[in-house]
Image 1: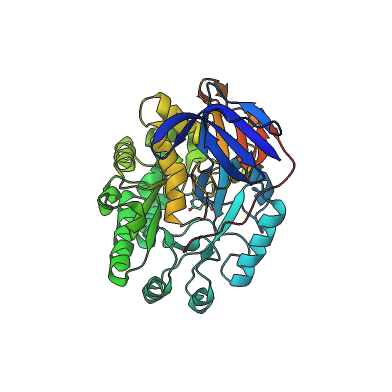
Image 2: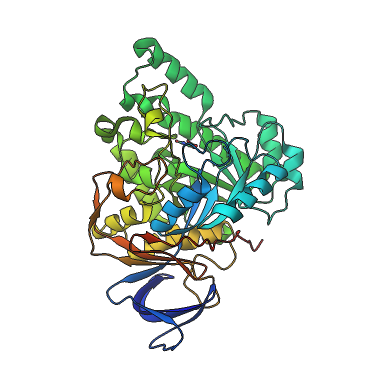
Length: 443
Ligand code: DOR
């Protein structure tokens, strides 16, 4: 099968160039001006932009065990509609991904069900270090530690164990950082005052900036002491941005950071209207935190953008504070939302591509993805930046059927998504063929 994308503005490696792209089977075989190929199916992308497929380094697709919220098939389908062609899925499923056997079972599920390229993170716990030591460094994306508790009871809180994991892991260790004791004490104080029906806007005061900083700064100190390769997931506070640097290239950094779409988009002013729909761990914090996150994101202290896509049913969300779970679905809307920030003049297209495509590939040392390059896998997104559309129940692809963006109009639409040279999504229509691959790494 061959495709020829004509007259696209290709956004790649810090530049924009008009070019044609020839795809054969699963590979980009040629990028040039005026390519012709009589056997290829032509897609005219004049007036449109081509990006490398987005790589999302943090999603929760809920399979196995929590599939009433979502599964690999439904959520990867939604991802492809949002231009995400590769995802790294988290270990807080049921059973948890904390043994090599469970990890390989997940890979088998990915092979059977996924529309997007897949890899998984292996969950470190208080008692699986011996298993972790057996894990091949090229087997999966890396190791995930919940240094603060969230959905799925995976808290790792024994300091000597955390140090052993840091000393014994060659792969990137990614972590959820929130200090458990601080959160427990804050929650107890709010429960004393309100019972279970705590106002939703208290969430960032319970899961406070202090809790985030205490945990992430301590973990970074340990990473420096042990020489571990450490990646802090979903930064949510301004104060933590000072823990990261931008003075060396990403490929040489030992300490890196991710920010998620919701922490760049929402602020605590939105709890009034959105309530539990924007309840996440770590919490969405103040507009000042958001501005400081943007600054660090743009100046290179924060390396990648992800979604932390974490669906829950609307019935689960529609509960009082203490019973409403944290997390929300985002994969379908992350790229359109970032393109909205481009329209607002906040970020360039080149920077969006750097943070959502190139940098996750560099950070996790993914083989042949994340760029529009000859010889690379043909994971590509075509976007029309001037076709406004509104997020409604009818066009939401998540199994949970809701989005915190419902009612939002985005100016940019994803018109085509290629996964390994296969046209997986085209103008609102999905291909039923699955052409995804397990990620491979260059480590
Ligand atoms: O809000 C969150 N929900 N944060 C996480 O880290 C986990 C996620 C989930 O799995 O529900």
